[in-house]
Image 1: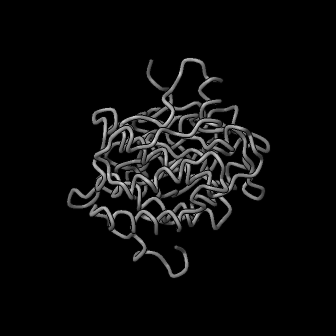
Image 2 (image 1 turned 135 degrees about the vertical axis):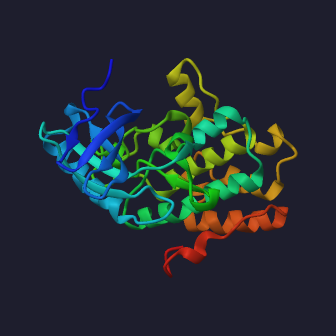
Amino acid sequence: MSDPRIGRMIADRYQLDRVIGKGGMGIVYAGTHTWTERPVAVKILRAQFSHGDALKRFFREARTAAAIRHPNVVDVLDMGEDDDGAAFMVLELLEGESLQARLDRETCVDPAATLATVLPLLEPLAMAHIKGIIHRDIKPANIFMARGHGGAVIPKLLDFGVAKFAEADLRTVTGSVLGTPGYCSPEQLKGERELLPASDVFGIGVVLYRMLAGRLPHPPEINLPSWVIKIVTEAAPDLRELDPSLPAATSAVVMDTLTISTEHRVPDMPTLLTRLLAAADEDGVEAVDPRSSLPPGVL
């Protein structure tokens, strides 16, 4: 059945051309800004999330997400309400594929390519943490491998707080159980009210582990409660035990992102970036320091 919004105008300036994604909270369309003819992506939230306090939180978080201007974060261009009251957000339209799509084809990714994908994402996450935002849903499906000029691949972080508006208030960051269990930190799965940057460090660590090992630290189980219990109580298998050929120093840093206790985990993105670069140098793995593009004092 065709989507009734296809061909419609949103806010008198965005024409919806086709559906490019669906989720529990909304639908994403490829569209066109009719005044400038710029291709855009338009995310329209489902009706149950487009009213009252949830709507206010959505726009507050959307503005905050838009303030995180960084080449490795999808640009938020506009937001508003359609004539039927549905909240919408306009984003840059990306060409490429998600990291998840790549991992569906390739079981593992070599260490240099893994670092080339993940290191640039630490910058915008550090910027978000300074603003008090915890992403809470870092996973391959939310990392888009965008095709840039000349064929360059630019990793971009998606859903930066946008999908969490119904449960989160950016003024008081809370720890509602959101996201994908296999990538959530133990404290997030336990429903702790205040999440620290270390919670996102855990998510990045799971992405690194998945790319290098070809599996999650705790593979999915049919029994969800059992799976969650393992994540919050059992240490992840050592990467080098799964694959002794993996670089030792880099693997050790990844394991330090996955500790159950935040007290023993890599605490934040600047520390993680410094340690990964040092480990790559020790291992002889090519890695580019992304900090040269940042304003002073961010990382």
